[in-house]
Image (cartoon, rainbow, N blue to C red; front, side, top):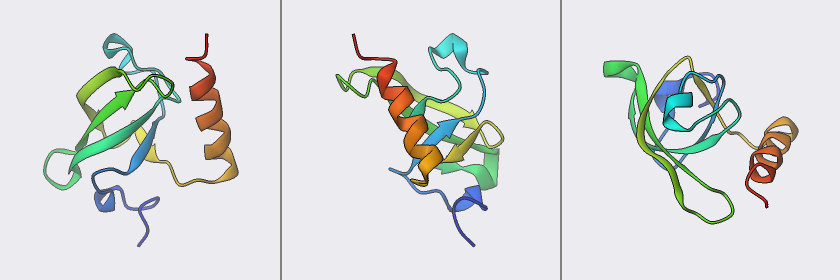
Length: 93
């Protein structure tokens, strides 16, 4: 089974894309891309992820618990490349 279908296979350092604005209070929006630090899908239904400014590398949010229904893996498709480009554009001044 692949990571895009089975989120419990997502490993640390895998990139994820937020699917909603549920984490707005943490400075995160739909389409933001983060990096998985720990996968607790099997036990708690969440991953811990860090989110960085793609231009400066500064932290946006660190060790955020993201629910399994609130993200999908970044798999490098054309759609993901567009999302990645749009994410980067948010931080270009």
